[in-house]
Amino acid sequence: MAVVRSLLASLVAASCLLGASLVAHAADCSGRFAAGYRVLRLDSGRQVAVWYPTAAEEKRLARSPNGFAARVARDAPPASCPRVPLVLFSHGWGGCALQSIALTEELARHGYVVAAPDHADATCAIGADEVNLGRMRIDKSFLDPASWNDRSEIGRLHDLRAVIRRVAADPQLARIADTARIGAAGHSLGGYAAIGMAGGWPAWKTPEVKAVLALSPYVLPFMVHGTLARLQVPVMYQGAALDFGMTTSLEGPQGAYAASAPPKFFVKLDGGTHFEWTNLLCAGTPDVAACLRARPNAALIGLYATAFFDRFLKGKPGELLSSPGSGLRAYRFEMR
Image (cartoon, rainbow, N blue to C red; front, side, top):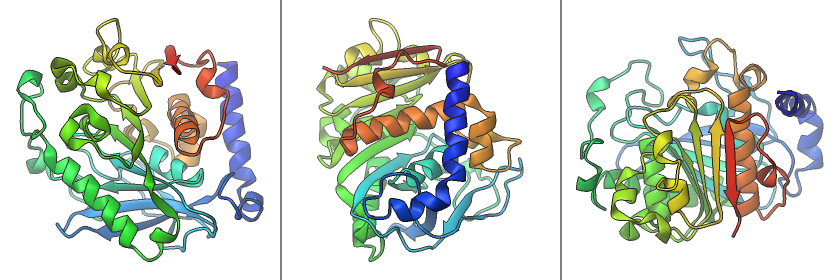
């Protein structure tokens, strides 16, 4: 826990130095920024939440019922710096674009443009207060992964590719978002979509996707069809000790990690359920900064995600990925 406390202390110190670092790092978008935020709309009518680095001042948005709130610079201009990688975020089944802001906001503060659409099954749509459980539909049963194929949940692929085009066409975001250097991230069913885009389904292969962050992903269809070995981009799987439904499929000699080609990484959080990557983890804290201080797993999720994308989207060396994984239940990696 001493290492975790040290990491958390570093996060707090970075937040305190934010104002000074904005100017110092404006030339190359390294270091730490404020998180800009805006909402785009796809031709389909679906909304997309976008976070990005900015030099503007963050302000707290309306609180959610559990007291947790976003703290962003709404509709602020992007930072003046060279283009940075685009990270696509696909939410879990019945989740929504705003379900994991401790990760999406923080990635923006570390120099990424992050775009998350509300998929067809989103129950907590952007800008809506009500929860609509009637949207929770699925193409195939989760309990019958052999019946899944490259047509299953293909709507998510269409959404994510439309997001790439929409960001590239936006006058402000096009100046900063590198849509040829993309990370695909997703939670649960969103992890399925991210892996599919990396070649889990060959027909879904999206060449611009250079790295995949799969957070407690639904991987059984790819395992049944034996396609994980075809992934040609680095992948980081994250699981949790009490996530019995998904993490168990990542582990062991027959698990997704073993079946995937390197570079590959497996982060297993100490404790935590399938919802450890959602805003539920931050319930009772006022904002992301407070959540990172109070919830060690929230800090670890972001630290490893950022280190992974820094390595494979920005080419930045770092020691964390080759460390013993202090503070985690388990950590495995294979570079080549």
